[in-house]
Length: 88
Picture 1 (tube, rainbow, N blue to C red):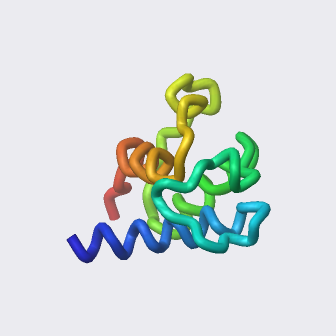
Picture 2: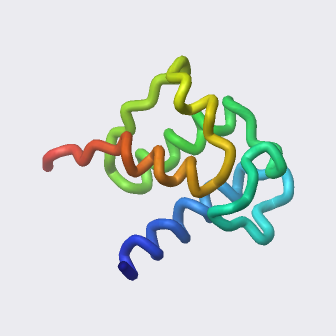
């Protein structure tokens, strides 16, 4: 459980770097729109997460599920679902 919390914290930190608010007081319930994060920022976040975590995230910008993401928690859950660990 601690590993999941640590990962959530890292993901929130990365999301915060792309937020117009500077990343203050971001949690799983924070609305993506309120943070000023647009679709381009989400793509940048995905690339940064791939590099940080050493995984491939099967991201398709045309996937309608991504357009439905409203909160930071939903974005984190989507990243977890799409992440594929690359073999060494």
